[in-house]
Image 1 (cartoon, rainbow, N blue to C red):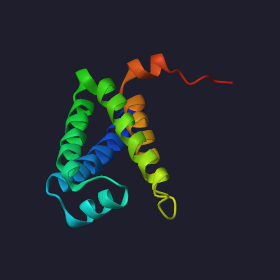
Image 2 (image 1 turned 30 degrees about the vertical axis):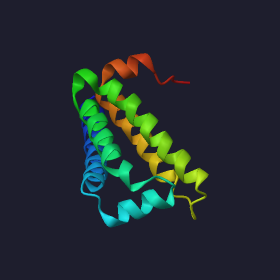
Image 3 (image 1 turned 90 degrees about the horizontal axis):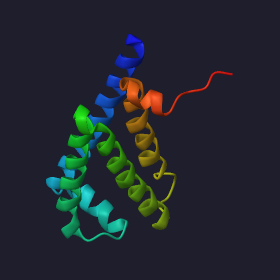
Length: 125
């Protein structure tokens, strides 16, 4: 049981670090971020609001009392990022990045929160 908890904490910590990095680079309006937003068809004026949104959703995810709400909101955000990349027909498969991080959001929560494991049990054959 301790292994699940610590694995979940590590996955969550790495995911949260990435999301904080993403939000902060948007707040600082890093040139690469603004270029990426423009490539996806978003105006530069949305960079800071989206950064704030990422950081708020991440804060909700980190707090145990609101972690499920944070996970749901992050899933929506990452789903939007995926849709934007698919719509822009970005070269390669960059849309897999937000899909994988969305999976990490839920995997980390699943492994560290027994309530989620009760709600979504893995069935043994």
